[in-house]
Picture 1 (tube, rainbow, N blue to C red):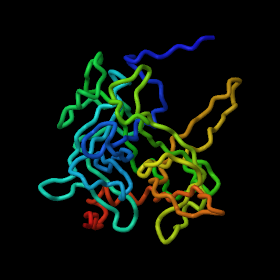
Picture 2: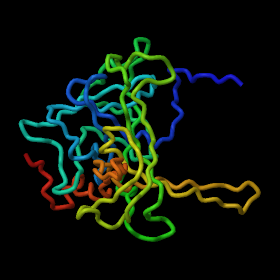
Picture 3: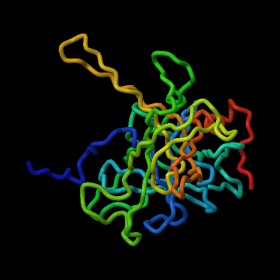
Picture 4: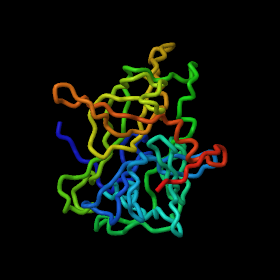
Length: 301
């Protein structure tokens, strides 16, 4: 049977809603040639939204441009201008010793699975040039945020299963097109670069044991360069119930267990081991809830 493409301007985009939590952020002037980093959206206890990323990803620039996929035209990944400085002071927050940073946004998106479409006004407009020429520019984009409820609390209960060494985990990351001269808005349906990619890793060290005197664990696998700051997700096995003829299944929400970080430079016979360090997700809480945690999260020069 011959397959068909989805229309580029369809009202819906078939996807796993988990990818609405992750954004690619252009550094400096937005575009194909710009450098970028990956982050994910997180809401604190007050409902305020942050981009969480790795501390070493924060650029030496005045602004970043996080990109979101448009609802009105899935080919478009419009950017928003987010300044990193306010009257000479940095707006982002840094963990005092772990590789995590939080960038506050001037919006409040819904929590994951409550709603995945954000249509409230931003302080600034989307960059119109990011939309295809025949696109109807609208303000709706796909966006949702993790909350503290998605982070494991360390309780071995039926409602929560901690990840263990040997378990598979997923990372949502990006890579840019090989043609740096191609603008975001050019391209044929069904979608435009950059697309989110879900990659799979295996937990290599005990999740609750610190690695190298840090609140971290190691994952084993292969990822795109520039994946630091991506969310590390543990998706519990699907549970089956067969009390009726048509066995129904229950799919648990994924748990946010870490922030993906740097590769661990270890080799055997000259070959890299592909081990990556991830900071446990609970370490981001003092960055976003400074009214609860009395930590010094001011970036150090």
